[in-house]
Amino acid sequence: MSADNQNETNQYLTFKLDREIFALGIAKVREVLDYTAITRVPKTPDFMRGVINVRGGVVPVVDLRVKFGMAPTPQTVNTCIIIVEINLEGETTVLGALADQVEEVLDLDPAQIEPAPRIGTRLRTEFIKGMGKRDEQFIIILDIDRVFSGEELASVAGGEDLAQAVRS
Image 1 (cartoon, rainbow, N blue to C red):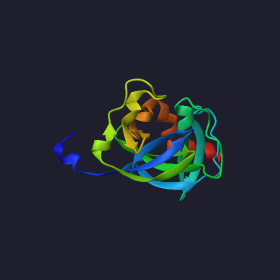
Image 2 (image 1 turned 180 degrees about the vertical axis):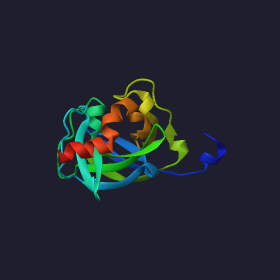
Image 3 (image 1 turned 60 degrees about the horizontal axis):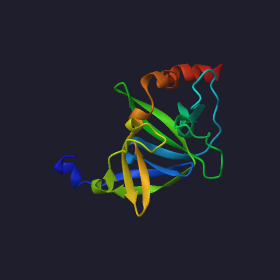
Image 4 (image 1 turned 135 degrees about the vertical axis):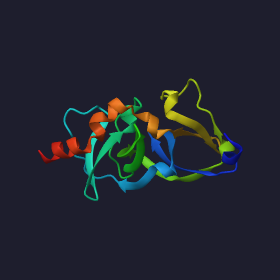
């Protein structure tokens, strides 16, 4: 990190998937919605749960637990959808990501963040920006732009195709 970055405090939205705590840079998060009915779309990847209507726009919803090899996200009173903006091949794409529950917005000083470990997590480490530490608890900081490949999201990000599938 540059000297400039070392003086910054970074804000992250923390959320749970299974028993693990994950975080996204707050700049990537548009909003957090209560769980709502998701319209399934045929012939999409397993991690793709479907689409929702967000202020008249079709937003694909993905299940990060499935993407990371966990059991699908159960619908509970705490289940929510985090609306994020990802950079996909130079374009901004809006996605909804299911979470078991949102925890809080947390300030982490760069000194509290360590590089991703090479082994010992359920994720391939290229998805992980770093490991934050609060008290004795580790927080997996995701690089949401690298969680999905362009090929994986080709069918998901094609909003026109999804909108057509929903209308048919």
